[in-house]
Image (tube, rainbow, N blue to C red; front, side, top):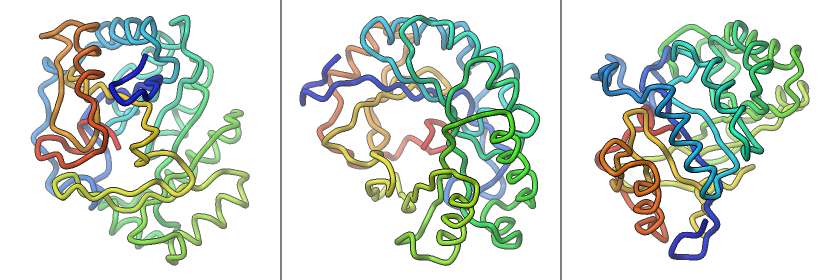
Length: 266
């Protein structure tokens, strides 16, 4: 399916929760957030029903995000339900890997194909400062488990201030090379100021070829991360929410004062 700028929209990112077991400085305040009520979160049935509609209209690539998707109860069941939708060619998940040692094998057996793992530093003190939790050992154990159970495509997402020559980024690059993984570098973004850059090692942030729409954890279809536009599937229905999203998808991202990374995914 095409938007008004003739971009082929084939990629759906689904935020399954706003909850997270870390408090990264660039994503969430130290005291946490006012969480979405469980009654407002999309059920798995709503997510799967929406995804079926999206796939019937041209989506073939799906990524699960959060918050942290692995804290959503039953996440393995959701992966299995999504993978059973005919027409999905690529099913992936972004995680901080704190719980990945436990979930790597069940996720792979459920049909998950790829993983993007957040890793900003290999220094324990720096990690604890950035994430406000001392969980680096858990993250590294989760990465090792994902490799062990046979995930062939694992990317490491490293948030940087300016460029990949920074000390922490170089350490992550060396670690990725040692493990046979791909490192990507994401410059710190600001939704309210409209500050974003093209991902080094990926296509994110390149508005001219953007092929994605987003489903928030409370059921809004978003045409762009850097926009306050959103169309509730509970109000519009699945198909009409997608059509409205395509109709109003901006040529380029601007600003967002209503969205947060922990509610719509990065």
